[in-house]
Image 1 (cartoon, rainbow, N blue to C red):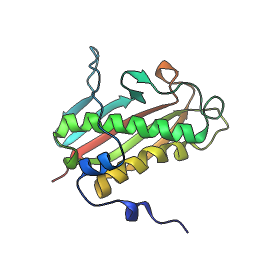
Image 2 (cartoon, rainbow, N blue to C red):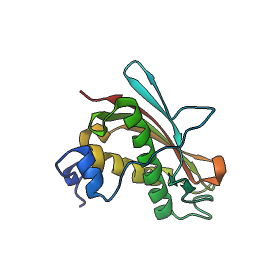
Image 3 (cartoon, rainbow, N blue to C red):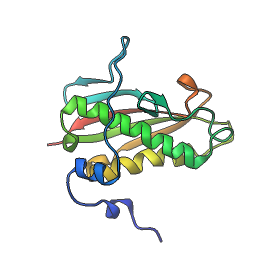
Length: 162
């Protein structure tokens, strides 16, 4: 029997846990047509984030045809890291980010059926970094295609934890 993910979260701050994973929040590129986050009251709505790293899209293709499940999970994990960077813009500090809802789009073949497994890559990162503040409601759906032929796009709603 596997250990529940919540029991694997190490102590320290969210920033320390992120660093212990060998990760850092990326700097997101500005866009003339939309913002990476929009705050409405206590809610921070995060625009769809792709698995970019240093301006380079980390993967292209369709999961179940060009991209395998494990690669899809890694791409989802990186898209979630970009979402965290946008969330920090909204609340000012990684330790104040609380994820409320995540919507994961997976470009996949019609018979793939494991979109939720791809989304687990993102969910695991959020819980590893934020602990209980990373637990969220989630929807994972398969789509025919995504921008720039990316396999994964993630949209999020967050709030500032007290």
